[in-house]
Length: 369
Image (cartoon, rainbow, N blue to C red):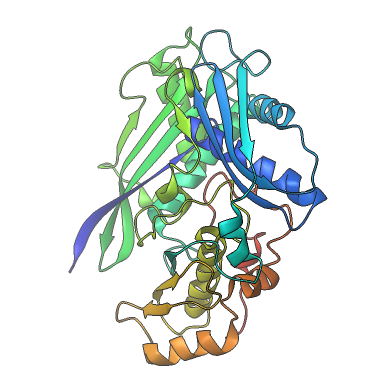
């Protein structure tokens, strides 16, 4: 019997990096609402009481970046008062240029916007075909936000993190070894109250009790105090949570971030397409787990390489799986954009709690292969 522990983490929408991701993706959506062919590559940086938005926009859309930024801060629930960023009075610095013509000339004819490698993955751990640890970490993070915004635990702040350690036997999740949660809270709330409430109102509401036992460990705010949060507590930057955004480290990652990029950037669009394909390889019964790698060259439309790995779980030869992929799917940037409908303003809803495993996203559709 092969027994091991595997850990994945997630963060709430108020984590400084996720704040920056959401500002960037909201700007992207606002551009696409007015101009579906917008070229967007926007980075956001948050530190102390200042937000910096920088990058490249080539679009006919007329948008108010400062207004968008303040609305995102308000909707997340930042309150100011010296414990997190003040959405009304924080400083916002904007530094936007147009996309380089050197890059545009390759993209305009349907080529990839950059070189790079991307991965897609799926397995049978969960009903959404995601690895168990990252799936559960996301659900816990989302629940933290829900109990805060619904007033169930109103003393919680926007900034939080979760981490789940799963014990596997022969590559199947059997039990949860550890759950670690840190969440910002009001100063006048005791640590005992925070710990009790999070166990009762978050963990027990989310986690199937069959995975919990007398040896499961719970660490709630292990530093003992978490009052100052958001950019006042730590800087935030777009694209710094790429493992949280994908498979929690259970599958490989090509290195490219997603948020703030339109679909001509294959870092984003190809990763979405490969998730779609890997999920359908598993859903169609060709393998119990599947990882796919693809590579592109800047200005070149067709992939340079495609690699399929089913880790010995395949029911048909991997070469046949690869042929099915090549015959069924147009993996050029334009082909991916058209197939998945990636010129629509759908990106802000991808930002938090993982870009994969959400049923309403086009790359999560199950089809016949």
